[in-house]
Length: 253
Image (cartoon, rainbow, N blue to C red; front, top):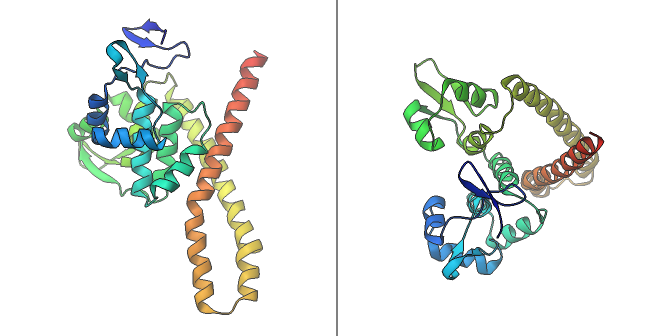
C-alpha cells in the first residue's frame, strides 16, 4: 500500500494511518486472542489485513476499532449472527473514527456506571498524559467531571476512548461546547418526537385493542428491545446527513 509520512507515521493517500500492527500486537491491544481475531476474519467481522513483506499481515486502527465495537455489542447481549447483520449495515467506507462513534452510542443502550478515579488511573486508561486543557475539553464533552476530592474525577468509561481520540482534533474549547449544545437540543427533540409517535400511534391503539395483561407486558418488553434499533437508525441517518452537508459545504467553498 502506498503512502506518505507525516511526523514519522506512515499514512495512506486518504490520510488514514497505515496498518502497522501484527496479529499478535492487535490481539494484545484489543485484549483478545489471536485465535479470536482469525475467527472473526473468517466470519467477515474483520476485513483482511494488508499483506506486507514476507507475507506478514498488518492491521490498523479500523481493525482495532471494529474489535472494540464487537466487544461492546457482545456486552449488550447480541449474538455473533446479530453482530454480523449490524456490521453489514455499516457504510463500506466506514473508518476507525466512525466505528468509535458507533461503539460510544452502542454503549449508551446500557450505559456503564460512572466511575470515580484519580488522575493517574484516568491517564492510564486514556493511554496518555492529560494536561489541564485536555481535562477541560473532556469535561466539555461530558466524558468526565471534577469531584470535590482534589485530583479525582467522575468518568464515563463508555465515552472515554472516543473523547481521548477527539483531543487530537484541532477544535476550540468554545466550539466543543457549542457543538454539544446543538447535539443535545436536536437529539432531545428527536427523542421527544419518536416517543410521541410510539405512544400515540403504537402504544395507545394497542392498549385499546388488547386487554390481556401478558400481551401488554410483551409490548412493553418489545418497546425496550426496540431502543437499540432506533439508536442505530439515528446514528446511520446522522452520519449520512453529516457527510452530505460536509461535502456540500466544502464543494461550495
